[in-house]
Image: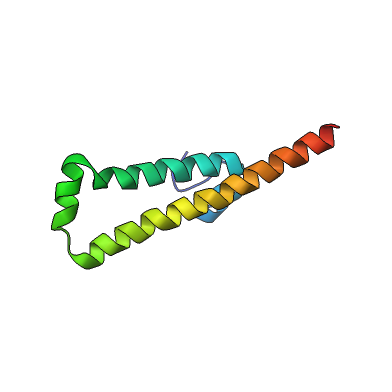
Length: 90
């Protein structure tokens, strides 16, 4: 299968891939993304990060923040979905 074609035969896109994921899976991805981005702020990564110009540093920090905010919103959605599932079982 071509990597640019999804399982349904449609062209792959980020938006389409999210539509087929659970909120829990998307939350996991966002948390891993945030952790990966934050890893450049410690150890040897921190030294390299300090060499970037202010615009790049600020953009990375905003990206980390935005990723965490997205994860927080997804966490609320996961909790709501779980509550809905529990209520449906009752």
